[in-house]
Amino acid sequence: MSSVQVLLSRVDPDVPLPSYARPDDAGADLVTTRDVVLAPGERAVVGTGVAIALPSGYAGFVHPRSGLAARVGLSIVNTPGTIDAGYRGEIKVCLVNLDPAEPVELTRGDRIAQLIVQRVSRAEFVEVDELEPTDRGTGGYGSTGGHATLGTEN
Ligand SMILES: O=c1ccn([C@H]2C[C@H](O)[C@@H](COP(=O)(O)OP(=O)(O)OP(=O)(O)O)O2)c(=O)[nH]1
Ligand SMILES: [Mg+2]
Image 1: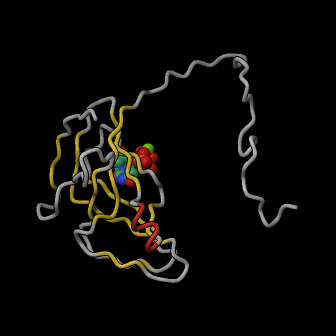
Image 2: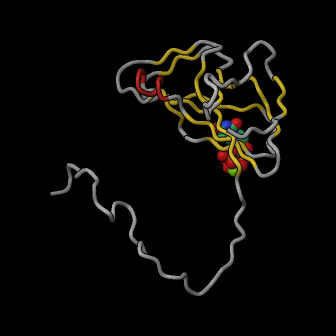
Protein backbone atom coordinates (compact mmCIF):
# COMPACT_ATOMS: atom_id res chain seq x y z
CA MET A 1 0.00 0.00 0.00
CA SER A 2 1.32 3.47 -0.78
CA SER A 3 1.93 5.85 2.09
CA VAL A 4 2.12 9.60 2.50
CA GLN A 5 3.81 11.57 5.25
CA VAL A 6 1.29 13.51 7.35
CA LEU A 7 2.53 16.00 9.93
CA LEU A 8 0.68 15.72 13.21
CA SER A 9 0.51 17.73 16.38
CA ARG A 10 -0.88 16.47 19.67
CA VAL A 11 -3.54 18.72 21.14
CA ASP A 12 -3.69 16.32 24.08
CA PRO A 13 -0.21 14.97 24.85
CA ASP A 14 -1.39 11.93 26.82
CA VAL A 15 -3.52 10.10 24.26
CA PRO A 16 -2.06 7.62 21.75
CA LEU A 17 -1.39 8.69 18.17
CA PRO A 18 -3.67 7.39 15.42
CA SER A 19 -2.43 3.91 14.59
CA TYR A 20 -3.07 1.15 12.10
CA ALA A 21 -3.91 -2.10 13.88
CA ARG A 22 -2.68 -4.35 11.03
CA PRO A 23 -0.17 -3.89 8.19
CA ASP A 24 -2.63 -3.40 5.31
CA ASP A 25 -5.38 -1.58 7.21
CA ALA A 26 -6.83 1.46 5.44
CA GLY A 27 -8.02 3.13 8.62
CA ALA A 28 -5.89 4.45 11.48
CA ASP A 29 -7.80 4.26 14.75
CA LEU A 30 -8.66 7.48 16.55
CA VAL A 31 -9.40 7.69 20.28
CA THR A 32 -11.72 9.78 22.39
CA THR A 33 -10.03 12.22 24.77
CA ARG A 34 -12.91 12.10 27.21
CA ASP A 35 -15.24 9.75 28.97
CA VAL A 36 -18.74 9.90 27.55
CA VAL A 37 -22.02 8.10 28.12
CA LEU A 38 -24.50 8.24 25.23
CA ALA A 39 -28.12 7.46 25.94
CA PRO A 40 -30.06 5.72 23.13
CA GLY A 41 -30.30 8.17 20.23
CA GLU A 42 -27.94 10.66 21.88
CA ARG A 43 -24.97 12.23 20.10
CA ALA A 44 -21.82 13.94 21.33
CA VAL A 45 -18.82 15.57 19.72
CA VAL A 46 -15.59 14.19 21.17
CA GLY A 47 -11.99 15.24 20.58
CA THR A 48 -9.33 12.83 19.36
CA GLY A 49 -6.36 14.77 20.73
CA VAL A 50 -4.67 15.24 17.36
CA ALA A 51 -4.45 17.84 14.62
CA ILE A 52 -2.93 17.04 11.23
CA ALA A 53 -1.65 18.79 8.12
CA LEU A 54 -2.64 16.74 5.10
CA PRO A 55 -0.80 17.58 1.89
CA SER A 56 -2.83 19.41 -0.75
CA GLY A 57 -4.64 16.83 -2.91
CA TYR A 58 -5.48 14.61 0.07
CA ALA A 59 -8.41 14.46 2.46
CA GLY A 60 -9.12 12.48 5.59
CA PHE A 61 -12.38 10.60 6.10
CA VAL A 62 -13.52 9.68 9.61
CA HIS A 63 -15.39 6.38 9.52
CA PRO A 64 -17.10 4.38 12.26
CA ARG A 65 -15.54 1.15 13.56
CA SER A 66 -17.58 -1.87 12.54
CA GLY A 67 -17.07 -3.81 15.78
CA LEU A 68 -18.48 -1.05 17.95
CA ALA A 69 -21.28 -0.46 15.46
CA ALA A 70 -22.34 -4.12 15.52
CA ARG A 71 -21.79 -4.71 19.25
CA VAL A 72 -23.24 -1.57 20.82
CA GLY A 73 -24.72 0.55 18.00
CA LEU A 74 -22.06 3.26 18.03
CA SER A 75 -21.88 5.27 14.81
CA ILE A 76 -20.98 8.73 13.54
CA VAL A 77 -23.67 11.24 12.62
CA ASN A 78 -21.86 12.68 9.60
CA THR A 79 -20.19 9.50 8.46
CA PRO A 80 -17.71 9.75 6.91
CA GLY A 81 -16.55 13.04 8.40
CA THR A 82 -14.38 15.03 6.01
CA ILE A 83 -11.01 16.42 7.12
CA ASP A 84 -9.90 19.07 4.63
CA ALA A 85 -6.22 19.40 3.82
CA GLY A 86 -6.25 22.97 5.07
CA TYR A 87 -7.78 22.12 8.47
CA ARG A 88 -5.44 22.57 11.40
CA GLY A 89 -7.83 22.13 14.30
CA GLU A 90 -8.27 19.05 16.44
CA ILE A 91 -10.00 16.18 14.62
CA LYS A 92 -13.36 15.75 16.31
CA VAL A 93 -15.92 12.99 15.94
CA CYS A 94 -19.68 13.42 16.19
CA LEU A 95 -20.62 10.10 17.77
CA VAL A 96 -24.17 8.78 17.98
CA ASN A 97 -25.68 5.86 19.84
CA LEU A 98 -28.03 4.08 17.42
CA ASP A 99 -29.02 1.38 19.92
CA PRO A 100 -32.74 1.78 20.70
CA ALA A 101 -32.42 0.63 24.32
CA GLU A 102 -28.93 0.57 25.83
CA PRO A 103 -26.52 3.41 26.62
CA VAL A 104 -22.98 3.37 25.19
CA GLU A 105 -20.20 4.05 27.68
CA LEU A 106 -16.85 5.21 26.39
CA THR A 107 -13.67 5.87 28.32
CA ARG A 108 -10.89 8.30 27.47
CA GLY A 109 -8.40 6.46 25.26
CA ASP A 110 -10.98 4.12 23.69
CA ARG A 111 -10.62 3.76 19.92
CA ILE A 112 -13.89 5.17 18.61
CA ALA A 113 -13.37 5.85 14.90
CA GLN A 114 -10.88 5.39 12.07
CA LEU A 115 -9.23 7.91 9.79
CA ILE A 116 -8.76 7.04 6.13
CA VAL A 117 -6.43 9.28 4.14
CA GLN A 118 -7.24 9.43 0.45
CA ARG A 119 -6.18 11.31 -2.64
CA VAL A 120 -8.93 13.57 -3.85
CA SER A 121 -9.51 15.74 -6.91
CA ARG A 122 -11.37 18.97 -7.13
CA ALA A 123 -13.94 19.20 -9.88
CA GLU A 124 -13.78 21.92 -12.46
CA PHE A 125 -17.50 22.36 -13.08
CA VAL A 126 -18.22 23.11 -16.73
CA GLU A 127 -21.82 23.96 -17.52
CA VAL A 128 -23.22 22.54 -20.77
CA ASP A 129 -26.67 22.53 -22.39
CA GLU A 130 -27.04 18.75 -22.38
CA LEU A 131 -25.15 15.82 -20.84
CA GLU A 132 -24.17 12.94 -23.10
CA PRO A 133 -26.50 9.91 -22.83
CA THR A 134 -25.53 6.72 -20.96
CA ASP A 135 -27.04 3.26 -20.34
CA ARG A 136 -28.10 4.30 -16.85
CA GLY A 137 -29.47 7.64 -17.85
CA THR A 138 -31.47 9.17 -15.04
CA GLY A 139 -32.25 5.83 -13.33
CA GLY A 140 -31.20 5.70 -9.70
CA TYR A 141 -32.53 5.06 -6.22
CA GLY A 142 -33.22 1.36 -6.77
CA SER A 143 -33.88 1.52 -10.53
CA THR A 144 -32.01 -1.78 -11.00
CA GLY A 145 -34.19 -3.58 -8.43
CA GLY A 146 -32.99 -5.84 -5.66
CA HIS A 147 -34.13 -3.60 -2.83
CA ALA A 148 -36.36 -4.68 0.02
CA THR A 149 -40.05 -3.82 -0.15
CA LEU A 150 -41.05 -1.24 2.41
CA GLY A 151 -43.91 -1.94 4.79
CA THR A 152 -45.86 0.89 3.19
CA GLU A 153 -45.52 -0.61 -0.32
CA ASN A 154 -47.69 -3.40 -1.74
O1 LIG B 1 -15.89 14.51 11.42
C1 LIG B 1 -15.35 15.62 11.24
C2 LIG B 1 -15.71 16.46 10.18
C3 LIG B 1 -15.07 17.68 10.06
N1 LIG B 1 -14.10 18.05 10.94
C4 LIG B 1 -13.37 19.31 10.75
C5 LIG B 1 -12.35 19.15 9.64
C6 LIG B 1 -13.00 19.76 8.45
O2 LIG B 1 -12.03 20.26 7.55
C7 LIG B 1 -13.84 20.85 9.08
C8 LIG B 1 -15.05 21.24 8.29
O3 LIG B 1 -15.83 20.09 8.05
P1 LIG B 1 -17.11 20.15 7.10
O4 LIG B 1 -16.78 20.89 5.85
O5 LIG B 1 -17.64 18.77 6.99
O6 LIG B 1 -18.13 20.96 8.02
P2 LIG B 1 -18.99 22.27 7.70
O7 LIG B 1 -20.17 22.17 8.56
O8 LIG B 1 -19.19 22.44 6.22
O9 LIG B 1 -18.03 23.39 8.31
P3 LIG B 1 -17.22 24.52 7.54
O10 LIG B 1 -18.21 25.59 7.27
O11 LIG B 1 -16.15 24.90 8.52
O12 LIG B 1 -16.65 23.91 6.29
O13 LIG B 1 -14.26 20.32 10.34
C9 LIG B 1 -13.73 17.22 11.98
O14 LIG B 1 -12.86 17.52 12.79
N2 LIG B 1 -14.38 16.02 12.11
MG1 LIG C 1 -17.54 22.63 4.85
